[in-house]
Length: 125
Image (cartoon, rainbow, N blue to C red; front, side):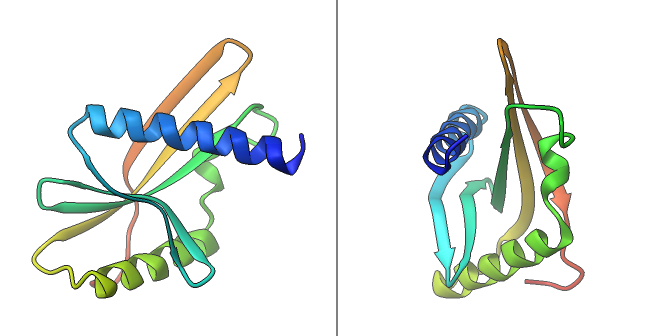
């Protein structure tokens, strides 16, 4: 699969994740938020909770479930970007959560899973 094809597949997964989250009552605040070289796929809000969402997509089971690909290193990058987002937008009096949406499309089998609170921060943002 070429880089362009991978990007297109990732975009498809993000669009489906946004559609899913919107349908569950989440307000989409940003897509592809960048803080330096770090990125958060989706920033959304539900009630008093700001959610920072990482989307992982797969066309094969060869490397395991896509939600398992959010490594500790990736988590640290998402947390750093979230801190930048919170400071830039002067967000106060909210709770924060880190979610993962996994999207698997293997032939005609399509699955989208939402993992709320997929990882945590040891200290307060």
